[in-house]
Image (cartoon, rainbow, N blue to C red):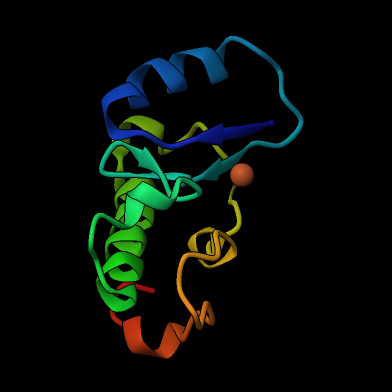
Length: 101
Ligand SMILES: [Fe+2]
């Protein structure tokens, strides 16, 4: 099972996950500030560094959310935002964001 992280629905997500005997649960961040990274408008005028940093902050928020602490087994596709292809260079230089990573 893959569960998408959204802060506002974390409690409901945890409740649903606890109701079923899933073998393995991925907790993935697709949405940042209320919009899926796949949607071009999610850039909102943000340059790549700003958008990627905000994405990683949201991933960090997901793994720090105590409501979901026991609800998942692994974090899914940390580089999701780079797959969305909104910038000329979509490489994800994790070293630029080392404190968050
Ligand atoms: Fe996903």
